[in-house]
Image (cartoon, rainbow, N blue to C red; front, side, top):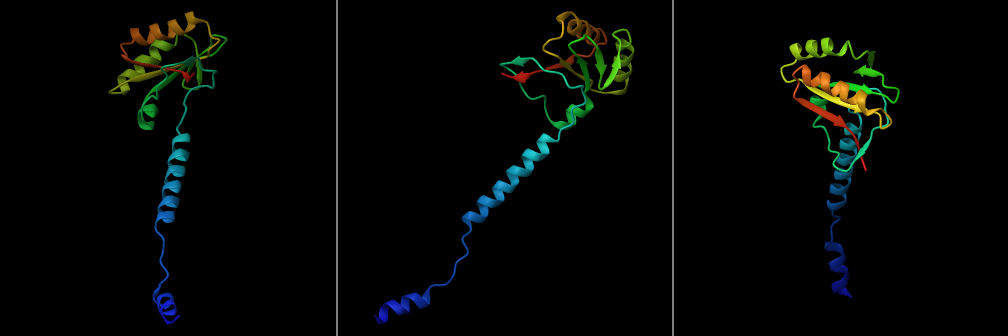
Length: 140
């Protein structure tokens, strides 16, 4: 009996660090997910076509430097969120290319949009001499 009470008196309260680390990692992951979901989408909302090889378009800073061209299901073209005609596009792209040292264009096309409108936009981007073109898609 005498030995058991001596053992109980010698135990000190310990701070367990493993649950603390778990909580910190959970909070870190939460903040990262929230900050990633706040990336700016400069284009008009369209129903993107699905592709098996859909990849992310790089970090947020690169997305902000890029111009987003959107084609909706009615064939209307938008420069960022501003509605323009296909005839106004070359001048806009030349102005953008003159101001940007590494011009990038992202094309948002509605899945129901006619292909000829998307090709016309892509053709104007190529004519302007912008080589970095991405097409926005959803993952299948």
